[in-house]
Image 1: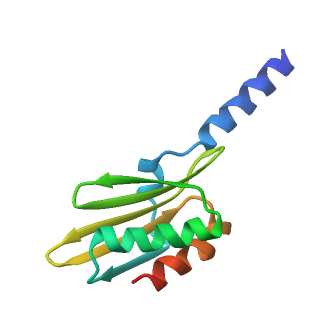
Image 2 (image 1 turned 45 degrees about the vertical axis):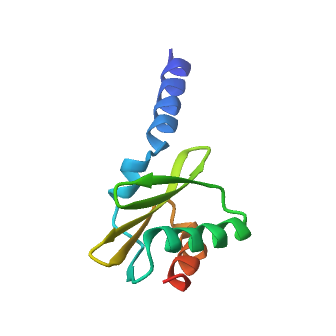
Image 3 (image 1 turned 90 degrees about the horizontal axis):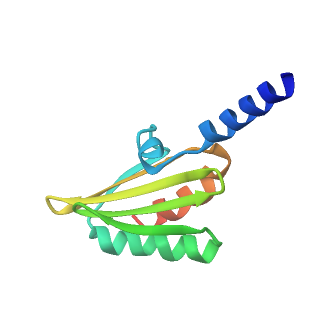
Length: 112
């Protein structure tokens, strides 16, 4: 009986650790900025830098911009959102795991 309870709690802990894009996007950003570049140009700059660093991610088009979504075995780890509005691009990077923040923030900042 105790084994079943422990296994149930372990499974629940694993499932609750999984994060999706909406969860990560809702977190306070670790990086925020604005640029005159288009959302497409800025996103491509960051995507190229992340690719050169070996970061695995997906790029998705969203309304007025793009998202770069970094996933690992426990779900979404980071989301970079770019939105072009009134001649400028707003950038927002949110992460779930703090240990990766600085390595992926630097290219986001340099591409501004």
